[in-house]
Image (cartoon, rainbow, N blue to C red; front, side, top):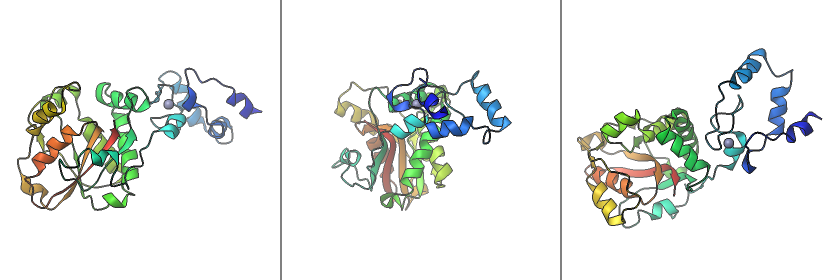
Length: 263
Ligand SMILES: [Zn+2]
């Protein structure tokens, strides 16, 4: 009876992928499993609602960052074991990468775009850490990335990081390390040129612009490592090429790439 009633609920602005999970909802409403504390936290959420990073609906207490519908609908690429995947192909004939992959497919409109926008422009660190955790959980199980021993967030220019308050790629690394405890390096690679948003510029322009954008003051610090470069989204791959270009000074270095999304 209660299930029928709940399944007929229209949850605010919910669209297709965000239907209510009836068994979990029943669990929450069941007086035998609901403690006073849970009721209080759910009640408090009515006044300060946490929002789903994918579709903006109010999150239930047991949902972390994404509602159950969005989490189930995440457009995962499952690229990791495919050496000819779309992300790796971006770098063929340009720079040498051991392996490259992305967690999610990116579309200009949609939940992944919404999540990345929140991380980058709305100070939503929680979503960054959450997404990083998903990335870590997925990649640590992948044989092609098994020898990775160091994580490296694509650096932001110092001024840009000061304005934003954080580097979104570093948030992803921090989230990854919560489930895949590898050392991370940050200061080793520096962004020395501010690259403006340049989505409309041609590939050659972008390459010339980012080629000299990174500087590695102490190449010896990374000698012999297998570094995993981490970034939020890969589109043409020009920024990553710039990073790898700067890392070429390191002896016996292997480089791989993992991004939250690929366009
Ligand atoms: Zn959602």
